[in-house]
Amino acid sequence: MSSDDSPPARRALITFAWVWVGAPLAYGLYELVRKATQLFTG
Amino acid sequence: MAPAGWSRWLVPPAALSVHLSIGQAYAWSVFKPPLESALGLSGTQSALPFQLGIVMLGLSAAFGGTLVERNGPRWAMTVALVCFSSGFLLAALGAAVEQYWLIVLGYGFVGGIGLGIGYISPVSTLIKWFPDRPGMATGIAIMGFGGGALIASPWSAQMLESFGTDSSGIAMAFLVHGLTYAVFMLLGVLLVRVPRPVKAAGDGPAALDGPQVSARSAVRTPQFWCLWIVLCMNVTAGIGILEKAAPMITDFFADTSTPVSVSAAAGFVALLSAANMAGRIGWSSTSDLIGRKNIYRVYLGVGALMYALIALAGDSSKPLFVLCALVILSFYGGGFATVPAYLKDLFGTYQVGAIHGRLLTAWSTAGVLGPLIVNWIADRQEEAGKDGSSLYTLSLFIMIGLLAVGFVANELVRPVHPRHHEPAPRTEEPTKKEASDVQ
Image (cartoon, rainbow over all chains, first blue to last red; front, side):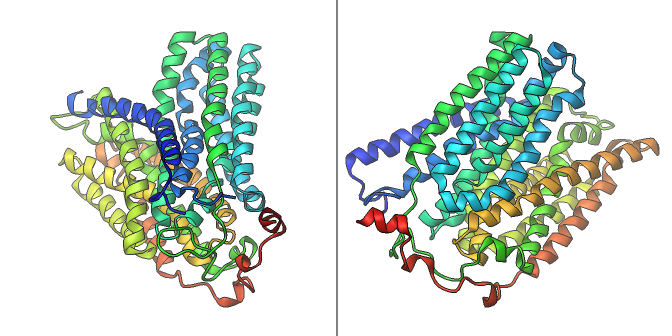
């Protein structure tokens, strides 16, 4: 039931799913860090 | 239901695809100025779609929770997808034909139902898949709600820059939002699975074991109302800072040799959002190690200490102010993310999603209470001729009092009396659908 012994096809699906949600989140975090640095430079 | 060998690590991204989408609600402010100029609205009017959305979130989570438990997470995510996306499409139509009421109806009412159902849709399922780490599992999903605004805020702003800020530009932006979120949330609908109701050792999903309490019985227990107070107080204290973060840091250090500029204040707000998000996953995961009651002792006790430090230090130290505010906001996020696991500990997994939905009325109450306290007191203090950090001193001490009330409520939480438990473990007897799946 766990992912530890997942077949390769399922591992690919897991990777795809995490990239699907991770990519926009990374974009949001990048924009956040850009804005947050203004506290120290602004 | 999950086929044999289905990985539980597919369920958090399914939950995140929904929460990252509906978290857009907190970035509504991006649309406010363009709507005000394009449709000639006041600030209050342009805020109405968001406010109605949050009210509908609370109502649909409270009243739709039982339906979500009965029909499962895929049904709930589908409803969330349809409502949230069609809310944007209706709002797009409203902007295109310059009918403000259609924007309120679409984004606020229809979209708000999507917010509430979407918010609670993965909670119960995640807890069932991760019985060994329920705090971490729900922390991932609820962190997504915070992350949704981080994504939507710059994305929506860029879109308005491309399409223009007149009514047709806003309509186009709403349309793209509705369609994009529909595709994005579809991943959650396709991937979410309920674990098979079998007892499993190790890190597999466990069956329903321990005390199981229905949502109907849970709201009749003192434990539910103690947790309601805990959540309400913790959220009120967090919102108290979040609501007025930028003016607060500016006022605090206005009379010092290093006043805070507008852009630095914006950076401070962004940093608070990061702390809020980090607290959701970090503190909630920590609760799996130190226990739910202990982590809330930290949120409420150390939170009160942080407020006291801000109040006593005044404008003497900017780093101390920033540090304390960050810790408070991390506790605010942590409080949201840990509460489903706390509910699971007390009431079991049987109807934890529905119970969570009912508990979210504490959030709606805090959403009104927090800003009301801070704004009202700051206005009165200003009228009394005070300025700088003294504008907020009274509010800060009130927050400490509220956190103390929450601390006491947390101390009063005891295991639920067996008379509230469901008579027999539900998983031992398969439902009609499960039986037909096997056949």
